Length: 142
Figure 1 (cartoon, one colour):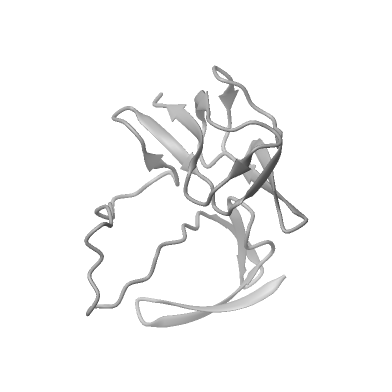
Figure 2 (tube, rainbow, N blue to C red):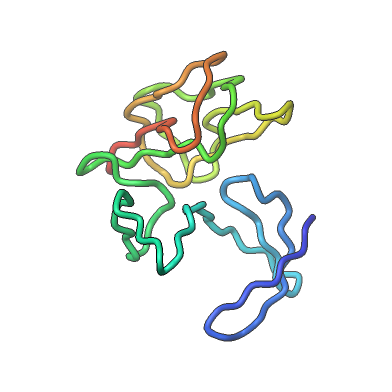
């Protein structure tokens, strides 16, 4: 368990994170567990605008990115080799269900569903390499 100090609206909180690579992440604040979605974004400075970056949607999200209207894709949070795939196209999943496992630097990282829905497409197969940010699974909107 790692300890982090976060600031929200000027208030400082100390939280404990069980596994920062899990999705969703379990964060504990004053002994109360919260399930939070975490997305990694490429940092830019104010002097260095990122002209190739897609606009950031600040509306509430279920943790998956828009692939096509009516669909949500789940990008790979890390590069690695897919060691197992637990879902198939057409399968219904709940938030937190195991979708697949990525082996990165000899560590197995379970990728869980960020939402309830139906798997439209599985873009990866066991034994294949995957790059960070590439789609793993696409969900149909329900």
